[in-house]
Image 1 (cartoon, rainbow, N blue to C red):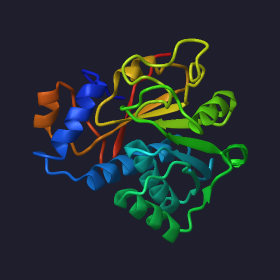
Image 2 (tube, rainbow, N blue to C red):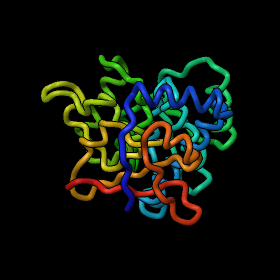
Image 3 (cartoon, one colour):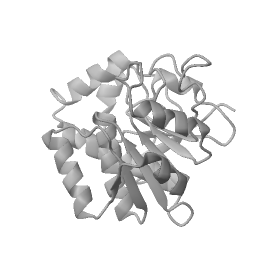
Image 4 (spheres, rainbow, N blue to C red):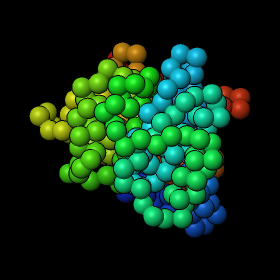
Length: 239
């Protein structure tokens, strides 16, 4: 297990991404590829393909959804059978290329989320990232409602969708207040919402094995020791 010294707020996460793509020299494609690869490895560690082979990937219209699409490609190559629900596909070059890559691997897309949820072994939540602001609009309001009721294990990328990146889950009675995934994959550094990710048997991974020590020091967070050639490192979860 490892620990991090500081959470990265929504404001700082956006600013850090901007810096990585300017003076840091990274392209959006590179950051998405690194994030998606980390997510695929975290899925493998949580639910190997010989245990839970079917993965339903819920991709939102932004970069979090792009991370999920990259993860789906890697999961296919790791021996899983992913199915993708992608109802709000933006017509942008980066997402069109990810879509084509998945088509070339014969990864199916579905428009029937409820049926796909019933037949899957696990769910990869790639709907909303750290820039999410309520309300949750259709069709994702129905998706979150179904996930709250489902017993299928859910793995969320960066923050559980419907949660506020800084203040965590919605207040009781609001949509998403009962949504708690089994696994959380923080990217670059945990966000403040991760403080609310608690529970026996839950697992928290960090992916971001590309950040320099100088960048981490500048933004005030600690780089954990990634073991061997691993792309993710597991963080402790409060019970």
